[in-house]
Image (cartoon, rainbow, N blue to C red):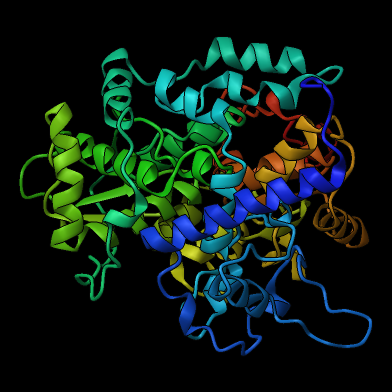
Length: 482
């Protein structure tokens, strides 16, 4: 009797009972992602901006506002009646909400509890981040495994054993999200100016595109900007968090610990711009600095950091120098550094969701387009500039289900738009977006890779185009770079 499967109706009842228990616990614990849900007045602003259309209007024309379905369910103590797995964690809903209700954050909190990915958390505890093997499922199809092996050998995970031990001790006793408070009125952000030196972050997702990281270092050197790195810096927790492998508090503690590592690399009193090739990292640090501006939150974090002999202080010392904010400060210098104008290249540009989340606006900032234009490439404007690529979370879900070629609605829209405009490649600011485009058969470059090519970088040694899954050779051959 015990080994017989339960009837489907019983399975549904049990699952719903467990889920309602989860909702009650999250509400009772006052998870920060839930705290402002009662401010929702069902205005419907977020519904048309959900790229995954996880609450598509019914045939009768009822808009069935996305936020209303989520917040009304919470007020009744129920699970939102939407497919949480379809959410790509772009946070467009939060970005456009006039009351800053985080529908994406609520979905993330429930999904995190229902679908915790123990493999990602285990990797955080064992390797302090997402090591190469985290991405192995994306390379197991024919012809791709050798690319994985080549990258794993040439670019091993950078964190040292001491850092791994610290992360393990830090996360072994997890904190509840409810111990943290909204930042209220955070200290003014340090304005980003042309820095003499920066801290360059190692990104977990950079494993897939080591050329983006190498290109970034080439550009910084050419601009005369000194960069520092540290093998004690670990994953910021952003990617595991959005894919259900790290909790709200885990992500904050990992980022706060890294801030102490970064602080140690600079002289006291220096302002510290933190840069990197990944907007999810930028978002993690921007969010952490905002939370740490509150004395109470900083005290909770420092009590946990005390277990590993660390303490974070003076969050106002740091600034987030995302590449789309940093490099536009050097447009004239970049133009002079261009050795080969890529004038024969037809490209589209795609700005990542998490960069827009960090800035709190869906408006198209000119940074990516201006930087692309510096190279001489011809930019074709498209709605895909601000649409979601489909998300790394969705990409992993498809591979885990054994359906790697079953493109999501978003993937299909992006691919169709690329083909309709007869583009040579897409240019992105995010290695996660790069991974999604690459897997759907669209030639793609990170903006740092495109800039480096125009500056004379070797396509194979620096940009490492052979590591891409979709060949860039046809386009680069046509303009004489290969």
